[in-house]
Amino acid sequence: MTVSRGAIILGAEYQALGLLRQLRAAGVPCALVDQDLLGVARFSRFRCPFHQSPRYESAEFWPWLIALARNRSYEGWMLIPTDDEQVRQIAEHFSEAQTVFRCGGLPWNTYQWLYDKRANYEWCRQQGVCTPRSFLPRRRDEWPGDALPFPFIIKPAFKRNYSKHSKAKAIRVNSAPELEAVLNGPLREVPIEELLFQELIPGDGRCQWSYAGLFRNGQAVAAYTACRRRQHPPDFGRASTYVIAEHDAEVERESRRVLEALRYTGLAEVEWKRDPRDGRLKFLEVNARCWGWHSLSASVVGNLPKMLWEVLDGRPVEPVTPRYGARWVKHVTDLPVAWHLWWRGELRPGEYLRGLRRPLVCCEWERGDPWPFLFQWVLVPYLMVKRGY
Image (cartoon, rainbow, N blue to C red; front, side, top):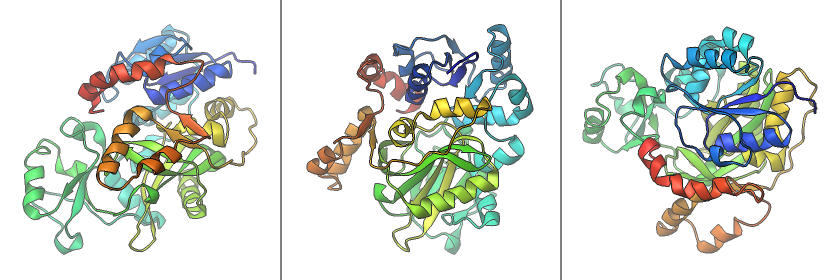
């Protein structure tokens, strides 16, 4: 493949590592941009320029990125986000992003329906997409009552302010006193219009599903369904730790309906949970970016970052039929999760070991590129302080 332009990967963590390995293997030059100085992708043998940026949520990030592109001759390069705040910046400056870079995604007038979970709830109702029951409080003393009985969870509409006060993806409350204690305690600085209350859907990782891959104008180019068996933390996970590529026709059908309504182009993951009480599939969110376990795709549909590069370069890419059965694991987070589930009686050692049989994709480990796997263990204390790892 003849390459005249490269790719700017926004991030330096394990998502960026997978992108870097696949793009460099395809001969695409890369540059890493991250708000943090340390990340496992920086230890890869596929060395490339690294640029530390302002915070993703800051007003300085986008002007800085544009200046970087012009000063370092990155204009025309593909831009790949790995974080929601990066996607928000691209969406809010979509016209300029399309002029300076090559990137997918959505303009803000559409992406806002995905970014803000309160707005997303209304969008799903308009589209006829089944979602968990939710309550959108307008005041701190406005509680759902019979509309949403306890227990339920408190979730952020978006993470920008919430993550400064809580590392938890969601907070379970079992009673009115607990709700009051949370709202007036750890979340007292978070505006109430940035929170929502949502029903607690039971069920373990066998109920957690995704449809993920590469899309062009809402149509699948290379996509597949997967069951997110384990996540960290186990109950309200910030990230998956063990994923199996399995086919689920309903997950695929409903996900395609969502992406077609958005006319989405780029990498994306649509998350669902099947409610074991009634068997209904309930929509959780769309990650309109590269997701954490994307390196599983290489064993299921092929080199997604390379295909994205070709799609955004205007080259023809034939649709790919998935090959199911492969598994993905992130050992550094899956080991404590597996231990926790074993302690609760929800995972047997034999089941855990059988799950590690081939075909298995390891998140950081690659025989020809071992240093990221080794350095991830060294970085754990740093990541726990910085991000609640």
